[in-house]
Amino acid sequence: MTLVIVGGTTEPELEEAVGVFVDCGFQLARWLSPWEDADGVLALRGDGAVLLKDADAQGIRYVLVHVGSDDGKSGGSHERAHHRVDIAQLRELAQQLKSRERMLITCLAFGYKRGIPDGAAWVVDVRLLDNPYWVDELRPLDGRDARVRDYVLNQAAARDLLDNLERTLKNALPHYRKRGRSQLIVAFGCTGGRHRSVVMASEMAARLERLGDVDIEFTARD
Image 1: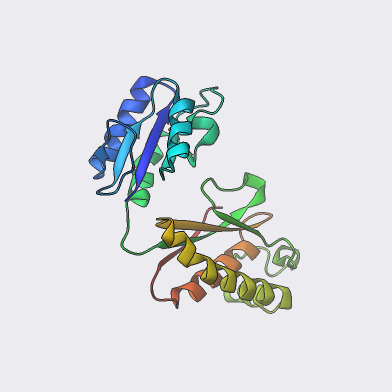
Image 2: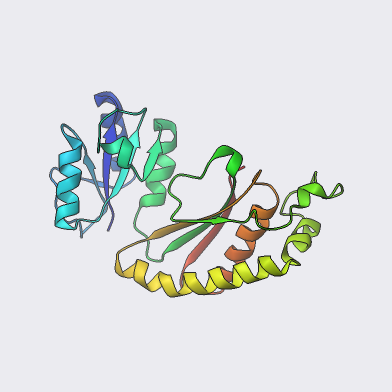
């Protein structure tokens, strides 16, 4: 089961955030303890750094979410957050964090121009590949187009990278499951997030789909 610890810049933000998680089926936790029977949400108040250190010392698994702007606290929820969001994004995140019977792997394409996505466990830089952007007829297209896809996947470096990453992920998944991990984001980045990263993320999603014992989704951020 998932224990979510929520920190916020203001008390109203914190109260609203906790309410969103409760509405999504999380049980309200009143104190810090191992969380095994259901998904739970715990509000981080007072000296949050102390509570987080206690959780780490006890080996309690949790997901830390910060709502709002930087609270400026050393070791606090903003500094250590797994996810930094605003209220408008929170319901979607809560649904993503709910415990699942099968592990969910998200293969996400992004552009480094807008930064690395929050929450990415693995970040794969695919800028080593030749860029379709510099081919005039491919520039206006994106990685969903078969011509762009062929251009990228016909490169030996792309196939080698996919083969090695697929093998490494397969070996890592049992260890993630042992630690109670229910979701994993594998992010593929190129310069603009439209060509190489889209091809590589969608191809990896298709390969992992064949495993059969995990749920797979592909998304392109940019």
